[in-house]
Image (tube, rainbow, N blue to C red; front, side, top):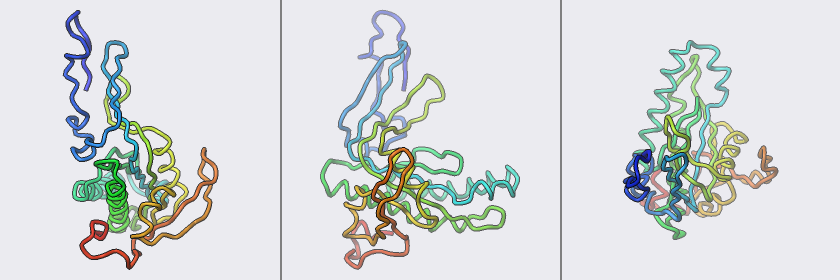
Length: 247
């Protein structure tokens, strides 16, 4: 990802900066819809970041995790978390959603449309919602302190920048208001359900059943529209065989 510049002839042009997908952090499908690629040199280190106009961000968090984690050993906690995150990882690979990272008991993922076409944006939203439903399905199969897990999930879509910052322990990440909104959608959501932003709802409301929560207060953003999707519900308008029907 980076290469320090040594000598007069070692310019940015011949630093062999590969497309982001070569680092295994963004899939071939998602990397094709790249609006702007930013390349900068700071302290003789090349940095690359990609701007995506319509990324669909997901955050998932275990409800009551702090209390649960205090009742088991660290070893038992890690074993349970690994079992859960492994199942979600498999879901990401099967569905075509990109895992970003885990943060404690929180799982972060992203779906990026293959183009700016409305149909492709809708498809990305549907894939991420499918992952959310899978998360709600697999979580109760894992137990901590002999208690089945439930998770809150939040989704938002909009512009983000993905890339790597710093000069050590590189990790591909995403930044922007959309990321913050998705995280707040999760933290203000309901255990066992997925709370989505108005933008996500707009693309999926014809195919999935949502509960209108009205205005929900999000820390740092104020009151915003939010909608709940319960994994056991979907609209009768969805036809068998449609991509959004593969839940």
